[in-house]
Length: 285
Image 1 (cartoon, rainbow, N blue to C red):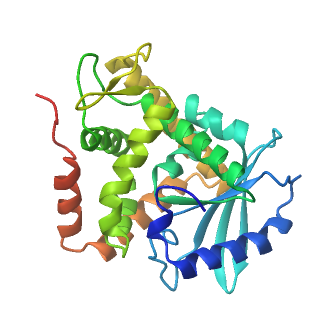
Image 2 (image 1 turned 135 degrees about the horizontal axis):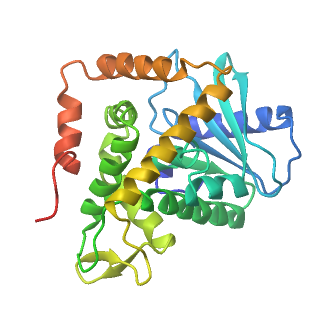
């Protein structure tokens, strides 16, 4: 396991995840290779699993062109949701938001890798970072000739993604009310900056980062068009994977609202997150 978020996950959860991966992998109905890998994201990574929590996983196929699919399983009486996706599809979802960020958006969250070798883990981590960087670049409002701190980069990424996916607020509440909260204030900005660097969207300069040479500035109208396309693709794919339910969005929104109230009934956690990342506040003068 080797990502910026690995130190946040408990040893017990790490062992649990490795055992889970070994048991569930043979049951996935696809052609597998020794270079495939798992990406765990969500509650298990930040040590916030509740009795009714499921475990969320991506199974990434190194080769192949299989269409992504959702697989439900159980491990030690706990539900497990697996999305199997090829690397090619993952990269397309990043660069062209082919599925509206349904997969690449998950990689914005704290996550860890389970791979067979150190080389596989390093390669997978670089691919994930590039996927995240390519994805968020479609929606950022970074400007030429401006210098951004790592914290400002994180603010831009989170504001852009919350504008696209308001329900991500619930996930942030979960992460920052977890035992791993204190480390995430550092590791999330590192992840976002590293992802944009890997995708060559930004480059380091004295005092922070600027847009990289050749990185296009995404104009306002283009960002809006990108958002519309991404939103339409996200919900259409989500509905398909949830029994072709045309009310899938309502189910998703209702669940997010209920979880947000359960985690942060008085709004204090969200206010702290907003202040720390300057969400809803312009960071440029």
